[in-house]
Length: 104
Image 1 (tube, rainbow, N blue to C red):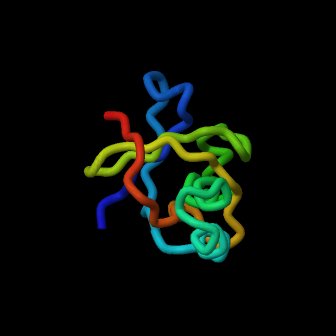
Image 2 (image 1 turned 45 degrees about the horizontal axis):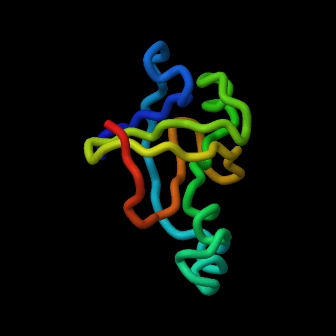
Protein backbone atom coordinates (compact mmCIF):
# COMPACT_ATOMS: atom_id res chain seq x y z
CA UNK A 1 0.00 0.00 0.00
CA UNK A 2 1.53 3.29 -1.03
CA UNK A 3 1.37 6.31 1.29
CA UNK A 4 -1.31 8.88 0.58
CA UNK A 5 -0.83 12.61 0.93
CA UNK A 6 -2.83 14.90 3.18
CA UNK A 7 -2.32 18.63 3.21
CA UNK A 8 -4.12 21.70 4.42
CA UNK A 9 -6.31 23.01 1.62
CA UNK A 10 -5.31 26.67 1.71
CA UNK A 11 -1.60 25.85 1.68
CA UNK A 12 -1.67 23.21 -1.07
CA UNK A 13 0.75 25.11 -3.27
CA UNK A 14 3.15 25.96 -0.44
CA UNK A 15 3.15 22.96 1.91
CA UNK A 16 4.62 19.53 1.26
CA UNK A 17 1.85 17.82 3.22
CA UNK A 18 2.20 14.52 5.04
CA UNK A 19 2.33 11.03 3.58
CA UNK A 20 0.20 8.55 5.53
CA UNK A 21 -1.48 5.20 5.10
CA UNK A 22 -5.09 5.95 4.24
CA UNK A 23 -7.60 3.56 5.79
CA UNK A 24 -11.15 3.46 4.45
CA UNK A 25 -14.36 1.95 5.71
CA UNK A 26 -17.80 2.81 6.96
CA UNK A 27 -18.69 4.65 10.15
CA UNK A 28 -21.80 4.33 12.32
CA UNK A 29 -22.67 7.93 11.45
CA UNK A 30 -22.49 7.05 7.77
CA UNK A 31 -24.86 4.12 8.32
CA UNK A 32 -27.34 6.35 10.14
CA UNK A 33 -27.16 8.94 7.36
CA UNK A 34 -27.56 6.28 4.69
CA UNK A 35 -30.81 5.12 6.33
CA UNK A 36 -32.14 8.65 5.83
CA UNK A 37 -30.96 8.56 2.21
CA UNK A 38 -27.75 9.29 0.34
CA UNK A 39 -29.13 12.72 -0.55
CA UNK A 40 -29.61 13.60 3.14
CA UNK A 41 -27.51 16.21 4.92
CA UNK A 42 -26.53 13.63 7.57
CA UNK A 43 -25.09 11.28 4.96
CA UNK A 44 -23.25 14.03 3.06
CA UNK A 45 -21.64 15.28 6.28
CA UNK A 46 -20.67 11.77 7.43
CA UNK A 47 -18.68 10.98 4.28
CA UNK A 48 -16.96 14.38 4.00
CA UNK A 49 -14.54 13.81 6.91
CA UNK A 50 -10.94 12.66 7.25
CA UNK A 51 -9.98 11.44 10.74
CA UNK A 52 -6.36 12.33 11.45
CA UNK A 53 -4.11 11.44 14.39
CA UNK A 54 -3.67 14.41 16.76
CA UNK A 55 0.13 14.39 16.34
CA UNK A 56 -0.22 14.35 12.55
CA UNK A 57 -2.62 17.30 12.76
CA UNK A 58 0.07 19.20 14.68
CA UNK A 59 2.65 18.33 12.02
CA UNK A 60 0.27 19.63 9.35
CA UNK A 61 -0.59 22.70 11.45
CA UNK A 62 -4.26 21.87 10.96
CA UNK A 63 -7.01 22.62 13.46
CA UNK A 64 -10.00 20.35 13.81
CA UNK A 65 -12.68 21.31 11.30
CA UNK A 66 -10.24 22.78 8.78
CA UNK A 67 -10.45 21.59 5.19
CA UNK A 68 -7.70 19.23 4.04
CA UNK A 69 -6.88 17.89 0.60
CA UNK A 70 -6.52 14.12 0.49
CA UNK A 71 -4.62 12.98 -2.59
CA UNK A 72 -4.14 9.45 -3.92
CA UNK A 73 -3.12 8.04 -7.27
CA UNK A 74 -6.84 8.15 -8.15
CA UNK A 75 -7.22 11.90 -7.58
CA UNK A 76 -7.86 14.38 -4.77
CA UNK A 77 -10.78 15.40 -2.63
CA UNK A 78 -11.32 18.15 -0.04
CA UNK A 79 -12.56 16.85 3.33
CA UNK A 80 -13.14 18.29 6.79
CA UNK A 81 -10.48 17.25 9.30
CA UNK A 82 -11.41 15.65 12.60
CA UNK A 83 -9.19 14.37 15.39
CA UNK A 84 -9.04 10.60 15.32
CA UNK A 85 -9.62 8.71 18.53
CA UNK A 86 -8.49 5.44 16.93
CA UNK A 87 -5.86 6.03 14.25
CA UNK A 88 -2.21 6.01 15.11
CA UNK A 89 0.41 8.36 13.75
CA UNK A 90 0.97 8.07 10.00
CA UNK A 91 -2.53 6.56 9.56
CA UNK A 92 -5.71 8.44 8.65
CA UNK A 93 -9.27 7.24 8.09
CA UNK A 94 -11.80 8.35 5.49
CA UNK A 95 -15.29 6.95 5.00
CA UNK A 96 -16.04 5.16 1.78
CA UNK A 97 -18.03 7.67 -0.19
CA UNK A 98 -19.77 8.17 -3.50
CA UNK A 99 -17.58 9.84 -6.08
CA UNK A 100 -17.98 13.56 -5.72
CA UNK A 101 -16.30 16.65 -7.06
CA UNK A 102 -12.59 16.05 -7.40
CA UNK A 103 -9.73 18.35 -8.23
CA UNK A 104 -6.37 17.47 -9.73
